[in-house]
Amino acid sequence: MSSQRRPPSTWRPSWGENVSSAYAEDTFSPQDGLQVDGGLRWELMWVGSRLHFSHELSPRVGIAWDVLGGGRSRLWANLGKTFAMLPAGLGPTVIQRDATVDDLEFGTIHGRSHDAGSAYQIDAGVAPIEQDEVTLGAEVALVGALRATLWGQGRFVRRALETTPDGFDNPGRNGDIPATRETEIVACSLEMAQLDKIAIRAGVMWGRTVGTWTGPYDPRLGVNLLQGPDWDFGTSNLYGPLPTDLGGRGFVEAERRGTLGTVDLAVATRLTVGSGRPRNVLADGAEGIVELLPRGSAGRNPVIAQANLRLAAQWRGYSVTLDLFNVFDRRDLTNLDEVFSGDTVRPVEGGSYEDLVFLKTDTGDPARRRTAFQLPTAFQAPLSISLGVHKAF
Image (cartoon, rainbow, N blue to C red; front, side, top):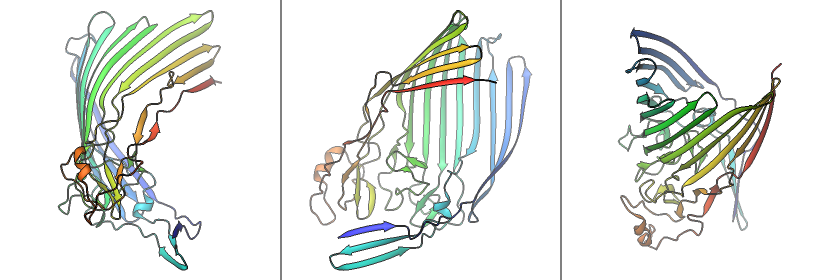
């Protein structure tokens, strides 16, 4: 038996997308060392003639206060609402997909099915992707040129867009689990700069991103144009750490500037280390992709570490930079195959990794474990070198 799917012609429809916006903003200072900023943004996002978001009002306010005076400190807070930009290329989801034919051969039997490429139905009342964001932070000069910064941020997507069995919609309006995501980050850093020659900065960061909606990009699927499979065949086990879950991060940056004759020189380095991506356990059977275990519950990929280096020189209007990425050529795993079985199985709601040995198909047979399960599919990019020369005329 063989099957081949191909477009019946090379015709491609043209996608029409219109994004317009206007905003008003004002910054005022009630007293020395205190600034307040407020604004209101209006946006319009249209894709073709069927998806129109025309009344997106985004208020925002921010405040910054130098408590100690003289530029020695800063307390700040920001609060605002945003509407996520619709991804470029959304036309195949809401206007027109490529028409295809599927040729099937089974022995002497030949068959063909034709898909006209109709776009997904857009449900009435569908609303844009809405996000609330809040940031709090403090910065203070400690000793000499040493400054410390502590800040935290929260971003909350309460309503997202995705394809569902009912069409292109805000998942959850029919009683299913909604498409949401939330991110919280806490970070601190120390920075020292002396006479514009030496600068050192180090910091640590912890964060998490949990929810049910991966967004328009998923490392396993690539750019999915908001037509991922998560809401196609049930919503069990969708909630959990998402691929962009930060975990722990640490970094050290250093820069040294100097001169050699008439040449200005600089050398800079950045060292980073961070948690790997959360792992999922999936099945890909006749009903499509399902989350066998709660999302992100199968541990994490290995820790990722990287060192980058930059050498720069300026002479008589010429700027030369030499960048080395991943200096030690580390090739740590960044992604792996997450499909445990290709059989038609049901999610193990609230289950654990140990439950997989008891997994059975819909017919009661033991589920077959794919040999490619948890094999690496992506690694850190190898050592790369980039040379740039710039001359302003």
